[in-house]
Length: 342
Ligand SMILES: [Zn+2]
Ligand SMILES: [Zn+2]
Image (cartoon, rainbow, N blue to C red; front, top):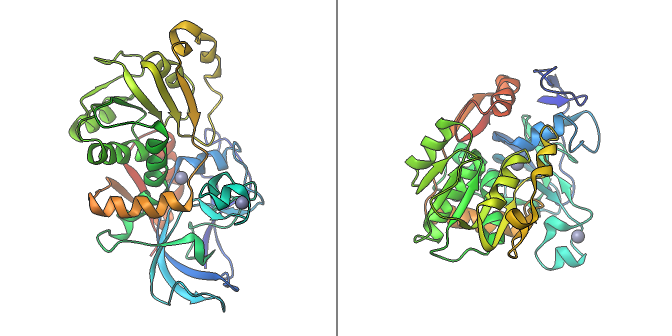
């Protein structure tokens, strides 16, 4: 099969074509695994973290990609949940131990034996991949493959982030950064909390315009002050400045939820601007999001179908993966990016 392989971690500024196309043997499903013929694979900011070494893959070379939609093409002997031809989705959670306190309470994303798709195990930038059946999801019929892909990570992690804000209807929500996850959270929030105003902080005027089109009550630059402070803010940026500025814009008792697996170090010294009375006092809280649990993906797919959410998607041909990654790095395209494999 064809597979895009990451052989070594590099800086994208120095190496704009980090993935190499190769022909390798098809994987074979064993026991509870299914073999999936990949239709599309979403492109996520975490791939940039893997390539640049902030979240190094467990082994190299590695096939990246963790927002996979495809069809079951072969079954391990013990599979019971799927049959050949079923359409499935695969997200960041590839497997977990199943028996620790986190797995038993639905927080399998916090499991110490958590394995990530496309980082610890081969992912979806390839013709085929295998996955344990309990970590694959049925996709509601309403979605086309390319629309479903960004729901599996950007959408599901947005859903978890929104849950962790503790927001109630009518409270104001801020979003810093407005990429794949931000635009899906905005749609979700308007559905779940119809009386809440949503304020969007984004660097680019294109992103701010997009946010207003989708129903944001206000959109401004990272440094701007919104009309009123927010009860909760979700940060989806890769850097530090928006964190400090978001804390400034929180109501007393407000919560900042940081939806990122890693932060880049380029502007880490911005944290020195952190002023206790302005940014942290008055019982403000900061909470990170680890990644997604199986429950998040399953619940979110159901809610997304009910709304229904229509993700804004930019499709790239399979051979253009490196170009897609660079577009993501430079925030050149709005909405979510999806690689078309078949
Ligand atoms: Zn992702
Ligand atoms: Zn566990």
